[in-house]
Amino acid sequence: MQSIRVNNIGKRFGDTQAVKDVSFEVVPGEIFGLLGPNGSGKTTSIRIILDIFKPDAGSVSILGGPMSEAKKNQIGYLPEERGLYQDILLDKCLEYLATLKGMSPQQIKQKLPTYLEEFDLSAHKKKKVKELSKGMQQKAQLIATLIHDPQVIIIDETFSALDPLNTQLVKDILKKQRDAGKTIIMCTHLMNQVEQLCDKIVLVDKGEVLLYGGLQEIYESFATDDVHINTSGALPAAIPGVQKIERLNTMIKLEPQPGIKPQDILNTLVSQGIQLNAFEIAVPSLDEIFIKVVKKGGTGDEQDL
Image (cartoon, rainbow, N blue to C red; front, top):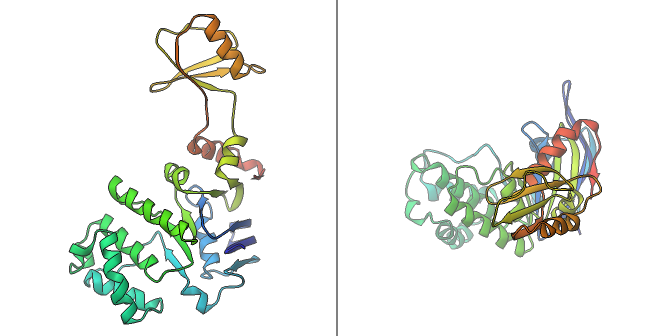
């Protein structure tokens, strides 16, 4: 069963078509990546899902049907524009935000200390929010997103302002939420975080879907016959069957001529007596796929995998 089903939604603001025929589904126990360049329609799509904007076309089903006031308390939303009250104490701020999600004082008293401890903020709970670093405020905002135990979690640029230690902390918490069966949509421009966390993605640009599917399927669909090698000795300036040699950090990328397969290159290298420490098929990174698809995106060819 889908927790979220977005069906051909569209939204126009004046002469600007912000979203056009966007569709995707997200199921429980999944971290779903909503990706795209700045101004691509990601935030508008999220606001339509949350019923902040009404679509001009299409529909959204969330938790089995249209949005309702009761369902809003089952959603945790971390917007890119942060919303903490700066001039009050951290614990009082979080208590107030929790009441807005329908939590009782007893529930808040029981759960807030655990969250403050988990996010390493217990020692700062009596500081005003404005006295906290940006990273601490980011973690506090995430507590406000999660404390009412929502079934659907939507987070926009979660890792901004976080150092590597806190980035790992937040990733572990998101994985724990996923493993508990929560439905998570993550908007981000950090492809390395997507590769580590997301099960499926949709890539939008200029309001349209350019790419949609599981990460492994996407990697396979963009696979090439390029290979990465590491050698003990010098490499010849030219290798039969190879049209381009590119030196990377510790590896050398070989781009074969049309019709030449990785096994052919391996046979050639071995026959020439080249000592190989490593030989592997080059897998394009999500960054590379993102750039390639967005540059091609003007063709309007959607890839649904």
